[in-house]
Length: 258
Image 1: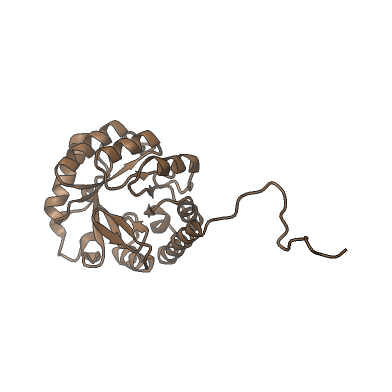
Image 2 (image 1 turned 135 degrees about the vertical axis):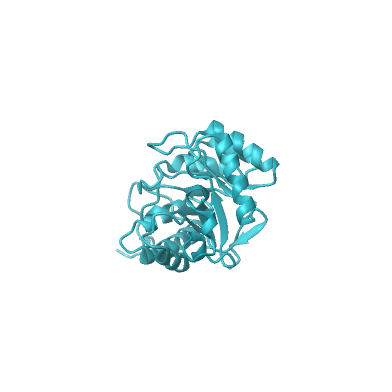
């Protein structure tokens, strides 16, 4: 495919990124990852026992790092110090400079603390990390994160795990006009139509976890999400017809004898 996503010096054919939490079993997670066609897999560093890697009991034992880019995330961090320390640990333990940066500001909504997020992003970029920050759908903050050196900006579509879909498409459009780095919708996708809408808006990729892991059939949903992301991307590139208040005949009436 010629329509690849370039980010952090790498090219990706798939525009669907997946998380690894909430699956009933590691085996089911592995099967869902395969069905999705993803190339980027996120792992919450603070929720994985790195000492168990290689034992056959660790989450990491079920992720083929030759096939997927491992994207450690700082989920569960509430301060700059926590997030930076977790990112450094991930780089040492997993051997990757990539990090999905999360600094949470509220335990109930899981909305990001953007002041702490920006500060952490600046530190990690200076240390050579490839930073993908999870933020709210604020165009001003998106621009500041880009200026800080973020490799992409990851605005939420809705609160994490809510499954409500894209709640503020207007802000996403403004963000796409505001920054030049890739825009990856992160959080809130509940079903295939949500993923398709995100891509039809023109965003570069979608990252999800609960929408697949929490489905009645995660493997089937992974396949549905793959097709939805592909369809949404194709539709965006094709260009939709303008919305009209009134009908427009599919067969023009000009030239029809009466």
